Length: 193
Image: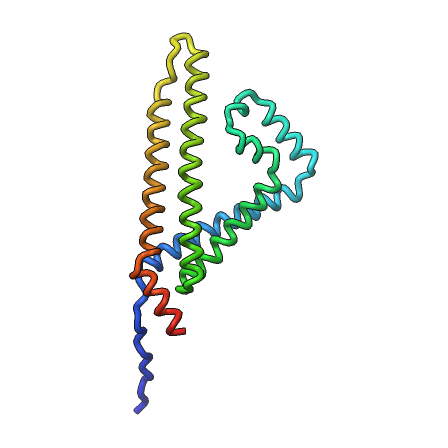
């Protein structure tokens, strides 16, 4: 009679929370990395004169002046922006794989990514609201009634609420990944290896 070898039970089971978050981050960052690589490839095969002509045409538009200075600067440096996005998302992809494998360095990197994303979402939401308010002011000045078009206020409110909701989720994830329970899970996996 043959006996089936019994594998030793893991000292610390892997939490479903970390696994699900890691897979979501892995899928998201993989898609974003592919998108960034596509942008880099597109910019690489497009003649520089064509890219510059499009940038010049866009920056000549009167609505472009509504954008804050950082966005205007980014419009003039499309190659650098595409490269930074590619590097960022590739780094997030590597960290996500590390989190899935329960590496302590990856947990710390993921916490840093969450912190950076929180700052970026807050910054983006504030800037978006600012741009929306400037646009609403311009549209109200051009209209006969002197009022903002219907739905514009609701759109700004929903945009702000969405930004707050995303920040709340990211803060919750940050706190969970810094918790003793998750930290202990990563530490026990490191000791077992």
